Length: 222
Image 1: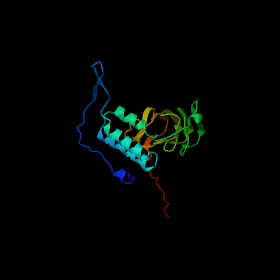
Image 2: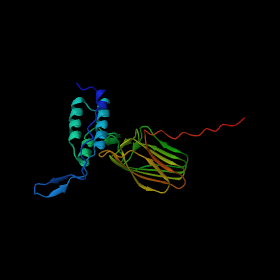
Image 3: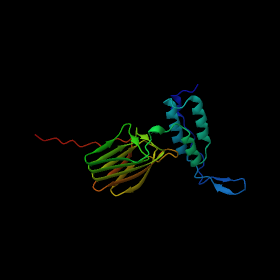
Image 4: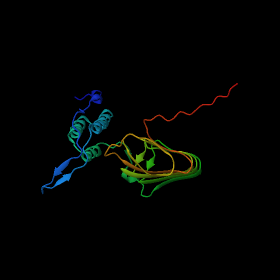
């Protein structure tokens, strides 16, 4: 019987020699590059994800053993990504019957837009405000697809995008100062193509594990 508590401390060895590429030979004898080799750090991150799924009951004991064996055997990032896609998704996926066919558009001329909790991200989501901050929290959101596009624009105000660790956040466009502190993406995790523009304000893209900056408190002297 596998102990859910003890599995959280399992690690794999990190002394294997790192190679630059993996090449396979097809049936006609021609070598074909199979993709970049997997690093042991990435393999361990995948095992950590699997352990979390097992501890939460999303993967049973047989599934855990099978997937762990697969993660220990994969040699390229492409194989690793396929293994991760075979596991329960790291984010909530919208049921097919409720997925939007048209883009989701959210706009206001003045005021803050704060999207958090269980909200639905369309295949394309457009968010715009004339004056006010925009906070887009993806931590508990429902994704209509594994590959989504988010377009955010504010004329005056900061933009903050909060992502669960491991998501592949691809910053495609911006026109303001950008502060990012994201962990490297995990191959096989959902992709978010982000275009964030602020005419007067900063853009922050952070993981949900990062503590928000503390606001200064001003005291009036007597």
